[in-house]
Image (cartoon, rainbow, N blue to C red; front, top):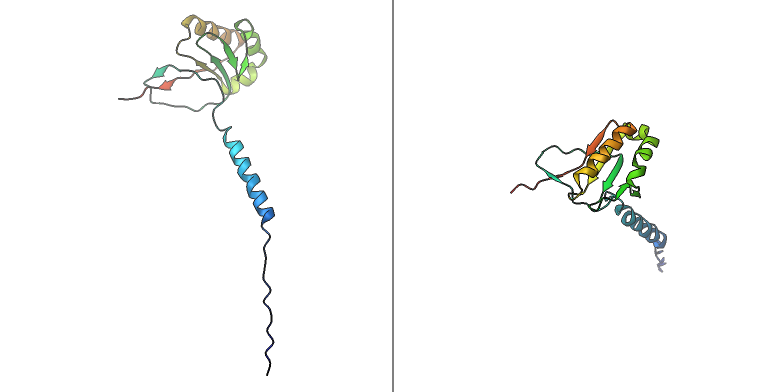
Length: 135
């Protein structure tokens, strides 16, 4: 009696294309995770002891310690600020204008900015601060 020996077929799964897809997904998540960081300039915001924190998105006006201004990272001189705000006042009033000024900004510049915003018709002005560290 002779037994026939069937050779078992070996199943091969080609995972080359799966590795390519996983590699692309990995690259996508690495690249997209860098955009999670809040855009803007490095400023030392004034410290407050208030407990309430509010997350707001909208037009952000950055003022550096030397008085340079940026709206959503676009440089803008003080003389053009009011006209720029007038052009986009409808969009700004929906979400508000966020003022992020460095701790070293002169008080007079802040008053000029607030005056230009009021003259442009901005209704909602949000002043950004950082929470003081409790000891």
